[in-house]
Image (cartoon, rainbow over all chains, first blue to last red; front, side, top):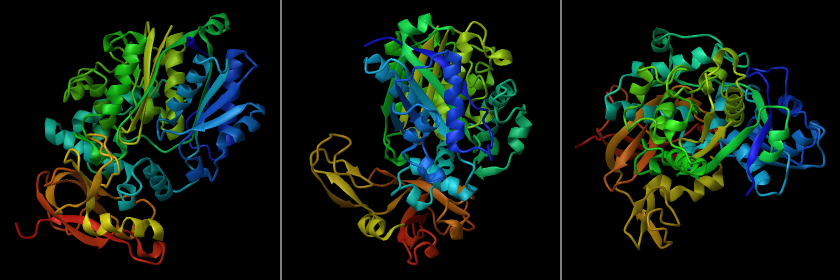
Length: 383
Length: 132
């Protein structure tokens, strides 16, 4: 297998893009990534997307994007892994280049969510859950996470305000990211005053509905070193799965797919949690950050809240997370979020993250989680 | 819920019917055709008692499409006395202070908006245990 590098990145601002379609967004990100790389050649394009059929009435999406971006007749495939779809697109691109099947491959994440009203989006997001035994019973995605959070608070005697540092951190970092949707800081008091969505989860526990696209151009690492941008190497790319139904796990508070994908990634990169300079966590809800940090070995079971309370997740801390705002602050265009996390990790490793720069960052981990911890895709990038 | 899906799921929805593994004795809800514990394929239908305790719960305020007439409604995860966890709507919770660990029992109720397809979908929900 060949070493793979990232030679170009592009992203649209995350926002409610009323005037722009799913194809407009994807094309903007693709063109930006190609321009960043200074490379014309594209051998294949993998489009990570979760809900184009549900929300835009559009499948056959990858071909649509390839056409709109002027790339016909290249290989084009949609990759879907719920909210981890953007990470899955890079995983697919990485496999294609590592295997030698292709040399220059685009990985795109794109989602267009704001054409529908909230009940339609809520129903669409619930398709990541078990359609027969969760969504079919009116169990929304936020409700599943709310039940996890309540159980966590019960088992570990945590209070709701203990989760505030995650949201405060994401907003603080988003305020320093010009592409982020929520560019304002919040206080723990704002967090506690925020309206409940599904108790105990409130608005500021939750990532918002929005639109966006991000893209990465990958190539063999040998090509990447000759490129015009500082080369970023993909040191690990892994995927692991667990039951789709949250109730079917031995212990719903142990996110085994997340733990497995992280363990495989550490092994591939020959690294341990202590070697990671920054971690783009899938903070769709504050409870997801907590369970992910514990599953990935950054905190013992029941102690991730302490990590946040001590400020260790901040840009100046020893394990900065969500450094450009995360899903909470930058916004969570679901199938695109994984690609945004990776683009942001590349910015950090190149030293191009501006005011949000993590000093001396050389190793970044980005992890996308689909469903309630049912599929996890982890990448470790290095310079 | 589409009619063929409703018909296909009737045993699970009406009787809380899952499966039991002949090889390892594991009992599962929802029903499975391959055992997730021993990975063998010798499973038979198994009806759960419908009694259990509340593992966790929340209230759905923003109902997904198809559930608006029920909103707001409580949902929970129930630890059945036979072992498995089940995710379901809770029923008869008005005036009840829900708590983790409280005993609950299965009842059959209307699951979703009747207007959606012109027929009523019935299925399991759980209510606080009436007679302990």
